[in-house]
Amino acid sequence: MAKKPTEETTSAMIGKRAPAFSLPDQDGRTHKLSGYKGKWVVLYFYPKDDTPGCTKQSCGFRDLTKEFQKAGAVVLGCSILDSASKRKFAEKHGLSFPLLADEDNKVAEAYGVWKEKSMYGKTFMGINRETFVIGPDGKIAMHWPKAKGNEDHSQEVLAWLRENAA
Image 1: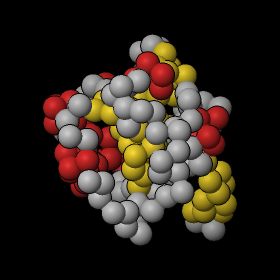
Image 2: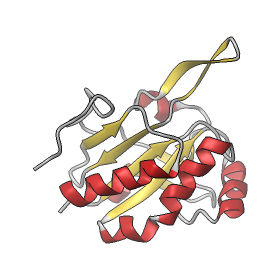
Image 3: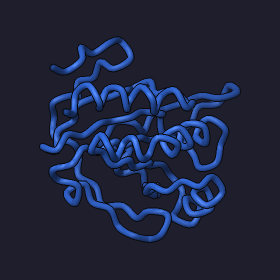
């Protein structure tokens, strides 16, 4: 039934209970994982609002929002920065799904996506671009630890849902 994991999707987290969260979105509404019990949840982490890769990734999910809904899934984006930053990002790009503000990085840490990164010879801590599909049972059903910062990634996640969430 479930598609076999590949190198890009192998994860020790698959089958484990998804870490709980309670975070505000771009409109200040609080979203709790427990509020989505019984539904498929696509939780994608992205490094920063309104940067090129993050915009492409988010717009890919935006363009397929109705398809994700038909597949019985809700899409949630999550990154650092506050709700005001998320609101500007959502308004600028017409993002109609919740963008969660993980200002203290606690949710990113719980999901293991808060990692050391390097750019231009400097190292720093930041969110790694990763996507999780959480099943109706609250367990992680799929994980892409090397999610792409483009529109193709949302199509890959949707294809997985169509094949496995039925």
